[in-house]
Image 1 (cartoon, rainbow, N blue to C red):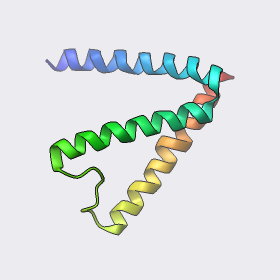
Image 2 (cartoon, rainbow, N blue to C red):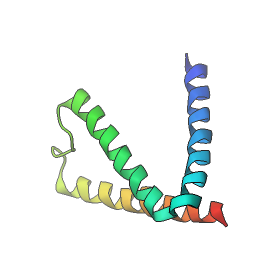
Image 3 (cartoon, rainbow, N blue to C red):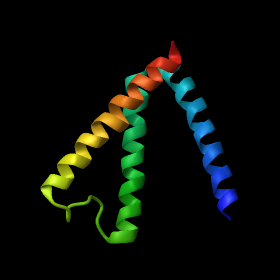
Image 4 (tube, rainbow, N blue to C red):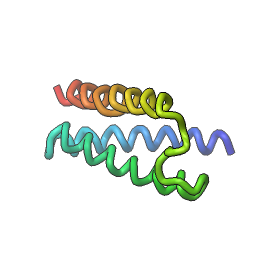
Length: 89
């Protein structure tokens, strides 16, 4: 079971890279990155609603939410933005 999930994850990463490269060449890095983040937020919202009954983690402390937001800004938005830009050069 673990090997199958690892293989599925590897194919997912490859498919994601190919999709991001093609989409970024056609529409631009910023547009692709924003669309990807919105889709991810929707998926995470559905998953957390099913598992915890909350769409957003509103039951955490403000300090935890602040660090989570900063981490998402740098890791998911800026990091991926510069990574995708680097791939296209």
